[in-house]
Figure 1: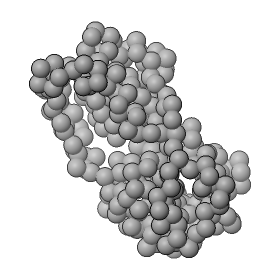
Figure 2: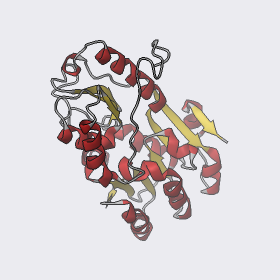
Figure 3: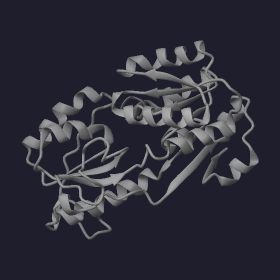
Figure 4: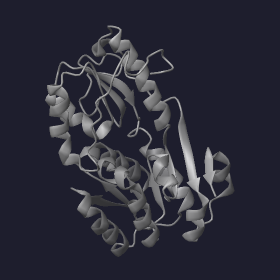
Length: 270
């Protein structure tokens, strides 16, 4: 906002709300912001269902939704048609790419476990379709709250999964270090959506540049404050995807990352 010419306290102020890793808090937090009659609300994907339920009039800028059209936040990417617009993670579209990258690291026929929740149901379905086409075996690990995470890892090891694909962002993103630690103790090579997990000790991630997405969200806020309607602002797709690999974690797991894959990485954490 500063780069766009705004001065905090003079041109705008913020009301910050966080779920502290508890998605069940989103409805009450959304209600608070609606009650305050905010001019615009900026939110990440996990909070969007509660906000959509809470208001159809206050402009909402998505700072990354995995599938805004498929999840019903907008009528279409080109013509959102309601009070929600912003940026997509294109997470569903690159599920196949994540699985392919994971199979480059972990060969063999052992099943790939997928950690997901109801908010990421489309992610799980996309993984099913890709795996069916390629003849890969999947293991479903659905979680309903953060307390299910440890049990999901036990289920993966009991089923002799060869690797893990993590979605379920509402539960896992605030607990990235804990999830990465569980993956390490379970000896499970794990693919994540965002680099934050890899920075916290995860093995590998492939996804949109989330920092760039949050910066781009400010452009939407600027346009809305200047009178634009969310319904008329097309949803933006990511312009940059990044592959991040943690070599320290790979070594701890006894994995050798193929040189060709390392060469394609945008960042290698030593």
